[in-house]
Length: 249
Image (cartoon, rainbow, N blue to C red; front, side, top):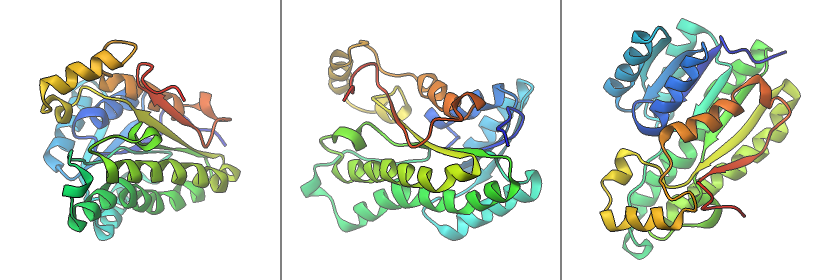
């Protein structure tokens, strides 16, 4: 059983930002990439960019907070391409608020997208990966907020911490099938979400990061691509921060 670079990869939230970079990076290795996003038009745009560069990709609609939508997306991908060998749970969502100013509806949305969503997607695709018998890779995108906490992101930090625990427990169950489960924790990253933040915040972040710059989506992609590769076959249950030195513990 071995993971190959010409297999199918599924990337959630691949329409923009970190997910887009991951999809493009995996396609550059020769993989076919199924790009799942609630913004279906952006998923298709990323797929077209990959195709224009000589790669293979297709965009699909999914709302990862809706199990019926997850199953429908899974069925559409598998019907066309068969089971995936690499699953990247990248899709996420956040807004910055003080915890005391948030509501139950907000908590449910955060948990639905950032914790229960990746669990649902993994559950939907994993059995096919196991049944195919070729091994595989699950790579979950958490956040350094889930490792050390982040002011203004209390519930998000809890959800992302949950992803770390989920990754580790899953790793123990599926390594017998030659399927690994690992987690990448981005630090502050130059994405559309952060570009909308006050300049004072981004300046402060750059000053706090030993590398003196924000991460680029490609920095995160490189870590994902390693965990998705044959080179990582004996690495599972691990959490890797990609933060320019901001998080070292």
